[in-house]
Amino acid sequence: MTTSSERLAALAALVEGEGVTRVTPPLLLPAGPYFDLAGEEFGRRLLLTTGGDGTEFCLRPDFTLPIVTDYLKSEAAGKPAAFGYLGPIFRQRRTGVIEFDQAGLELLAQPDADVALDRVFGFARQTLEIFNVRHAVVRLGGVGLFEALLAGLDMPDVWRPRIRNRFGHAEALERLLTRLATQANGKAETPDRATLIEQVTEQMLAAGLSLTEGRGPEEIADRYLEQQALDAALVPGATLELLRSYLAITGEAEEALAAIEALAEHAGIDLSARLGTLRRHLNAFGPAAPVTFDAAFSPRLDYYTGVVFEMTGQGGHVLASGGQYDRLLERLGATSRIAASGCAVWVDRLEREALA
Image 1 (tube, rainbow, N blue to C red):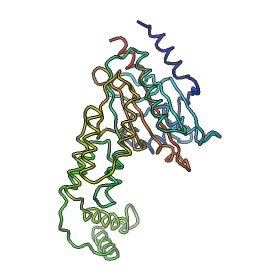
Image 2: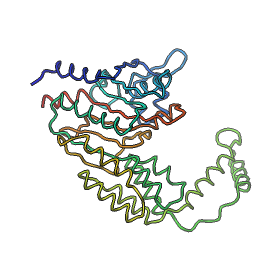
Image 3: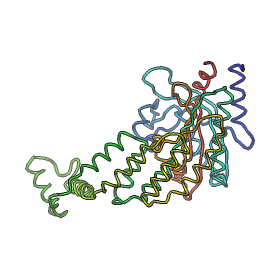
């Protein structure tokens, strides 16, 4: 059996593999981008401090964001690059330590995005082998597959982005689907905008409210009209039933993908390209670990774009996770599409698995 130091040395060698540049972003990073990209939910886990000029900083909560940000600012932006890392990250938790070692691989602008993703899978698999993890389970998800399904469904366009934004957030998505299923068909006639603004103005004045402080009559009226338009845009019951059926599919990967294929064919939606991509990637994991597919699975970050995955060990603890995240580069200012895929592994959890 290998020692802890030998395992860490092997992991460091993997991070510094052929063609990979090992990088170490600063420990103190601007907090703003994390709030912009990951929202308040992730923001509550940041360890924050404030600079003398009022700028908010955080201890490094991950490696991907600073690596991609620096790449886009460099002369190498848009050119193939591979970055590896190994070091501490810092996140708030209700109990326990707040510092964790994490390792990972980020592949950017690779000429073949599918080959790059398979390389990421291989990195995760090799990491588990270093720590002698024998009982890992792989869970795959398809963000791109869900988006393709959503694009083919019969529904008002106004609802597609709202449903997409809740994908991966099971409770929020279920609340929205329940709301759509219970919308009333009959609506009272909505006044035109000018009339509505006047009505709001009169009500605010009668209540002694200021027309200039806080939300004004125009903003209130526009928000009301937007909500009325949403309530009037009904989603067919058959569409909601199909969505729920899709999201409920989970199990052994080949069987789950076959069930999705049958569901899509029955609905007249062509998902063959996305399903073919997922089936090709199944081979990247080899026979060492069982692979499941969960149609509702997605990391709780909306910049993932294609295939996503996680590997879990005993007790269901996530040991490795990642996937394709092209949208992150777009949101950080890339002017053209740059393929991106990567994964992170949790060293402390892997070490516990090795000692179990």
